[in-house]
Length: 610
Ligand code: G6P
Image 1 (cartoon, protein in one colour):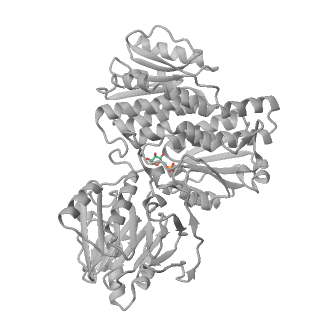
Image 2 (image 1 turned 90 degrees about the vertical axis):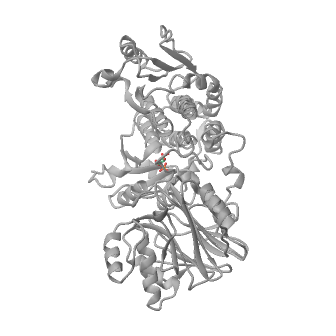
Image 3 (image 1 turned 30 degrees about the horizontal axis):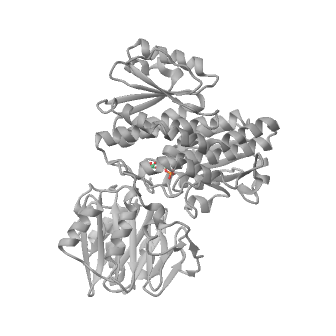
């Protein structure tokens, strides 16, 4: 989704802006641009496509300046072309970059047109530039003009604005979309996230909803919704610039798949000791709240939603707690009935997904016991707005298709489920066995990664396919959903997932020699039923690819399929373990098909608009 970088410094900021845009590429975008103040004049460069196109343009016609704003755009209003790319200018004196959606843009556009402003784009953003310009021509300074302008905006925004009338100043504001302030030595920055700025500083201020900030080379001041100066705490980020490098891997996604044993290890570290989940890991007030939980409502999007689906099986099956789950975009607009003593559980890698955040804010009004977030980004909006938090420690995830974030979410959710199970009086020996199983997850993941060459070979059989069907049962049904999502996201092969028992209620009609069927077969109580489902596929000439627990015997696939053996562990580990070969399969199919693995078309990493 759109990314913002801005800087006020003593040196030329163009290289800083470009490096920031590069670091934001992972969010997904289709055009890029920047504007700097050069000798009192606003200059601008914009290109469709990747940031390197913008760099090429700048190599031909260099720009330089000590203050500026830059943007990667993920089209919402208006096609991805140069005219719609940001920054948007008003009469050559105000430039704006924006992330979010201005819902009342049509009305503002009419008002501004009536005032004589000419529009050059189809975006909702351009109204902000003209509005700020209009307010400045009425005698306001840049900050006052932006402060007044944002009061007129409905919807979500993070913006950065410069003006030739206020050299060296950059004004930013946020509501509903993220924006952080980077504090350098004698220079200040704005960015959509910490990663955009980590090469220039590790000190950050996270803006609150409705905040406005003005930066210059020497100073930085935050103002609240009422325009009053406020102090916001400065945080030192532990993120290292290295953590966002690709290293020797061909793609970030592959790097992140291979980081999973380490990431799970980090997520569990210091949280299990002596065969027990440590009680303080959920925060000081957690125990009292968790003791009252009689129902859990999970809300999330995308891959995080799949992690939630797994957690539902565990919550009911292990902790004996009823659980409902819904995608955030549905939940937020529905009059859901809240059961008594219900915990509102959100799951999000970024902590900035617009629908998940909106659902949390909605949930807070509806009488839940409290909110609990499983999240990968400290200081994200979700973390700051939730009562209880359990951080996954996946480290930055750059590939748009989520991998290590998902498996670390599973590990974190398992910790929560086991704690709730303990509170609900699970038998001590059963509890200890499950804790020990969870602790073995990093090792199991390490082993399953050794299958990569086998899976790379298997991928060749998918390259020319147009469709694929994924099957799973029980706690591994969400794994099938996740496998199908990974394949469609990055290889663009149409993939669907079904609970294997539903096969004969529809999808079986699609099975023929051109429809590969991919199944995970754990060694659990549903195995025999799953085997019958596989027979149904085989009888229709379908090609079967089975990822089977190493204790499971699957015979007779012959040429028409393959069995890959996986040491998958019990129901607590198997979902994470079986996900890894499906991630690798999607990855290798995508590489063979030559797609943009880390930044698949039309998708964004962090969906900060509705
Ligand atoms: C986007 C990403 C997915 C992610 C989903 C939810 O669609 O491409 O990878 O699962 O958003 O994001 P979150 O940050 O809330 O987990």
